[in-house]
Structures are given as structure tokens and as C-alpha cells.
Image 1 (tube, rainbow, N blue to C red):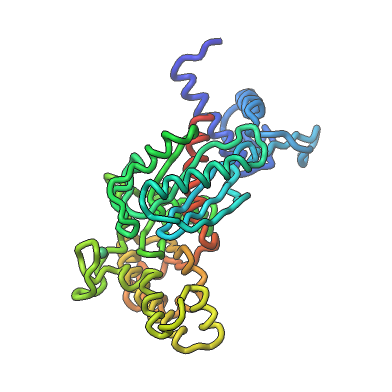
Image 2 (image 1 turned 30 degrees about the vertical axis):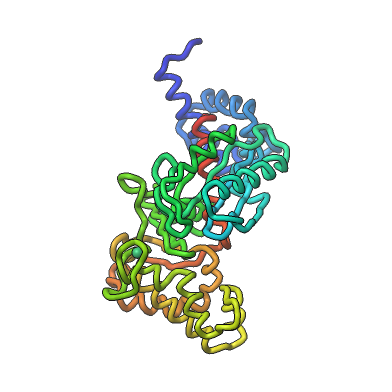
Length: 386
Ligand SMILES: [Zn+2]
């Protein structure tokens, strides 16, 4: 039987619904899918047969019977293919390989040798080649590459401006796509971090969440009603440049007193370096000092918590989010920064807004942006597969 265009479309939608149910609720039987989806059993059986042929679903042992023959259960084949996700930082390139359910199966971190676009692109391609050649065997193999990049990224994956890399108008996605025979997707790293937390991290139950990427600057990724909010041209989330000191330090963005000048990881480390001028102060070292009872280290972290909190007040009052997730390396400092941060947010936010917000620290360690970037490739794969 030949299907019309509309019938094709309906079939694709139904197949995506069936696959989503299996991804979320497996193991389950064809009969249970029929109940959950509202599709009749014959339709479910035919769609499941296609998904099995495509290696996306497989049958497993027998389930519980409510009387009569025990049903065969279905599982999502999360190992049917793999995606590469990269978090391009200012100093580093963090690469993960995930399966189709976002589980990290490999991870590499390399230092950037040189920050020029040509050099960074060459390094990305080198890591990509190495990673692509060392994937576990699977029916689909490598399905694509996603990258979370710093700065302002447009919808074509061009980095319009990344001041910390000194990049302007670098068509990263286009240049990588010319060299890589798989789908390549580039988005802002705070956006991919928000997706990583929402899809696979501590944000899974929260459809209104803000991810705060605290690194060289501060970026924010905004999930509203279960969707990434990109703004009209894709540039939302530059909350790091909201003003927290009217006559504060000048910022490269042209403003002064920007939040990220006081509450980024660089700001914390510059402040700490004044106390230990003869040491290279890093976040792990500062935490080690705090653990050992060093008052100056504890005070640095408390001050940082206050400054981070001041910016969060603006976010709490503007977005009324369910959850705010502080991400990147600083997430490990949660224990030290949280009391002062919470005190500031509680005393300055509108109480109606504050009461409903949870402020938490990423449990994906530093990997949220890379995992979220890989999920862009996974999402694209499923859109094409169904
Ligand atoms: Zn600024």
C-alpha cells in the first residue's frame, strides 16, 4: 500500500511517540505501549517491528503477566550508536562520547595549544579523528558531533564574538562540517550545559531551569517550559554582563561593573592570588586550603558566594525558575559558597519567587556542556531516524 504525504507524516509522528515511550519507560510490552500511546495494538506492533529492524529497539525476556501468556518486553537499544560532544573552553577542550541515552562511555581532556581559530579547529579535528576511530562497535557507529562553544553563537553555528578566545565571526560549524562527514552542531556552551542538565543531570524533572556556567566569564542557559530559550537571534543568556556595581571595573563588553567581573572563576582566582602571590592558585587548591581550615581561603569563597548570589537575585526575580544549577569546576565549591550565596539570594529576592527556587550544584562534574552538546547530535539523529 502506498502512503500519502499526510499518512507518512502521521506514521513518523506515531513512531517517534512509540520510541519515546520505550526510551522513557522500558522495559515494557507492546500492549502497555498501546495503552500509553492510545495507538491500537496492530499499529504499535508494526511500528515496533520497524524499530527492531532499525536496531533501535530489542526484545528481552518475559514480563509480568496479568493472567494468560506472559508478554515479551521491549528495551531501547541505547548502544545503537554514539555521539561525540565537546566543550570548547578558553584553555581546554573536553570531549565525551555518549551513547544514545546520554551515558558517557569515553572522556578526554586536552589543553588548547594555541587559541587561533585555525589551530583550535585543527585540534578539534585531531581529537575527533582519534575519538571516531576508537568507538565501541555499533549498528550506526558515530552519529554526529556537537560542540558547546564560548561567546555569542548564531543559529548557523558561527561564533560571532568570543572575547576570551579573541574570536570574531568564526564559522566553526561550517568549517568543521567541511571536514567531517557526519552532522556537526555548534551552540553556546551555557545552552548545551542547560540541555545536559535538563536531559541527563539534576535538572531532569525541572522544565523551568537556569544553568549558570561559571568559567572565565559567566554564561547562562535558559530552559523555559521544557525548551531551550534562545532569544530572537539565538543570543539569549548573556547575564554575565548584567551590572552589579554601578561604578565597578570596566568590562571588555563596554559596560562596567558586570556580574562576571566579580563572580566568574577568573574573578575568584584573581582575588585569591592576592593572598598567595607565590602560588598558582586553582579551584582545587583553594578548596584544599579551605578543607584544611585556612580562614583566608574560606573568606575568598564566601565573598565569591555573595557576588554570585547578587546576580542570581536578578535571575530569580526575572524568571521565577524552579531550579538554578551552578555548573563547571566551581560546582565542586558548593559546600563553601552556598551559605553566603543563599543568604544574599534569600534576603534580596522577592520572597514569593525565592520560596520556589532550588539552587543546586551540577553533579555532572564539569561535563554538562559536553554531554548537552552530544545530545544535540543525538536529537538530530532521532529526528532523521523516525
Ligand atoms: Zn560586561
